[in-house]
Length: 180
Length: 129
Image (tube, chains in turn red, green):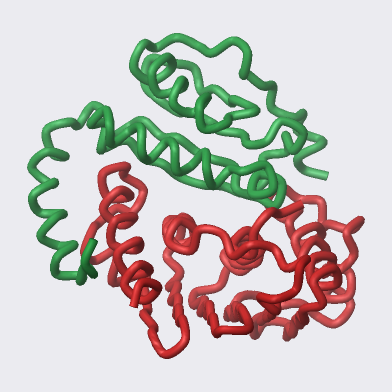
């Protein structure tokens, strides 16, 4: 089971990356009372039958790299139920999928947020040529990270030296909006 | 730390580049961390972080750190596969932050295996069906 809200986010975004999406947009919205997460992709999507199956923890399409379709969403559904949050998934075959979830900060069973910059780094460095845009907001403050900009600036995002620089950059952005 | 811009980042990258070009022998070394549902649940993000941190501490800045989905060894997550010249491709299980740092010292620098963490890959029929 996942520990933090960021872990759920990683899991959902990984599904998008594996769905052959070329564009993935992630919103991480935080207010005084709530967390809201939105993940939308233009990947291969699911027909209504597959979509229903995707929410069953005991079903997976069985091929390597596709197992998360079963467990990831079930974990999310369980956490939402425990923490009285909400979640939704919409998908259209050959068009894309979007997943959203919200949690109340005050609910005792809401998981902790987790490490936002670390999670963003982890999402940015998944292999592939897809574009990934992350919009993060905290009250009125916000920033946006664009994967292609990061790649243009740093080059190969898998090299340890570049990862360290990307990490510094992401931490500085997050601290800037949190510490105001 | 004050807020960095992409320009700041570009400058930092440029000063690093000279350093990175010198070490071509590292280019063929690849560390792949399993980041499926099972990996995430077992703390693979901390493992990933430990690799990035330790590689930079030891100035192994050209080694690649990558991620993949579930590798089929969910019982021993976090799992990590290491590809490098002069060493067999090795799959390690139960790679906590400490073990990640040990892998860099022992496997990557000393070129020796960490016997306690070596895993077999699941048989092909489990992965494919």
